[in-house]
Length: 161
Image (cartoon, rainbow, N blue to C red; front, side, top):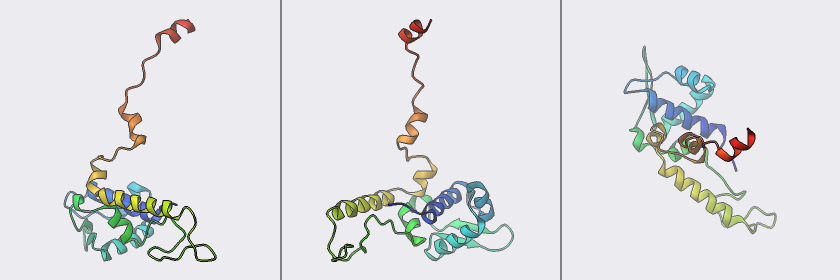
């Protein structure tokens, strides 16, 4: 199971937009440069985001994109779904009773993977763009940044001398 670059890049770009717009349109070229994403790829993603009602475009000099809704009302799951990126954890088609095995039955672990997909969707539905911008999402990768470095063990220092 994997979230493709389409979904990840769309979320990265939307978070960048929320963090930098301050009420003014942001050019895609600026987002592309900051996030190191191809401009043509971002154009494709933002066309889908605009169609999905998540961003508004402003034409002309000083134009660019704005969030269509406040960052605290824009869910990460909405962004991923707007770029046609459902997160699939099973090989089976969602919502059908048929399984992915050759005899159309479900594998023994089907319910495990399906529930994992449900949990991922629930989590991404609970996280807003504002949560990410304001760094309210701290996983285990952020814990090392918050912990002070351990003090040197005095017995180990004494033994080394």
